[in-house]
Length: 66
Image (cartoon, rainbow, N blue to C red; front, side, top):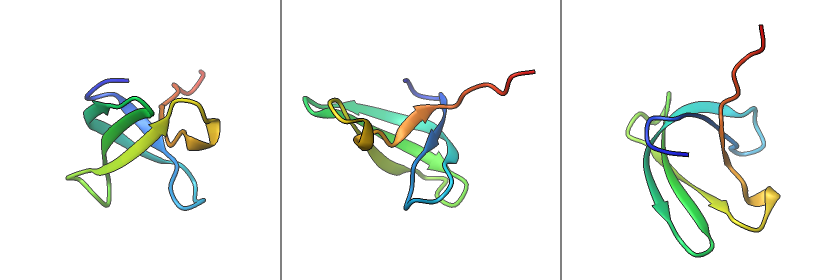
């Protein structure tokens, strides 16, 4: 994923929220994404772990099938 991609994020067990990636930082253990959300337009950092599906918080938004 890259800057300006439309994504969804997992937060507090609630429904996934849509946002836009503002920045990306890569680390050995995974990737940090700064995501702009409706309530947080300046962005919130989320971390995706490389080796854990449970540690995946940011995903590309899937297009709705027609």
